[in-house]
Image (cartoon, rainbow, N blue to C red; front, side):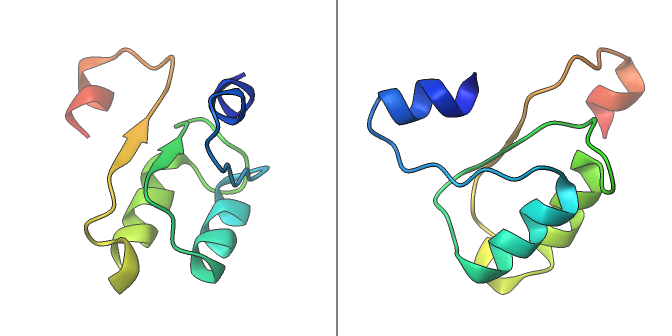
Length: 77
């Protein structure tokens, strides 16, 4: 739904099926903003963010996590 809305608004969207796919695509192309979920197969959102931040081209790219997780522990992470 998020990708559909962004595309409809005229944004170029690169979608991934899971965290590992997202990291692989990020290594191929730098984007202006990363939107991720926490709960994904193969690699969760926090692990994806950690891996992205290790890439020079993603050290300052804004990353937003959209998730249904609501625990205080998750919010702190």
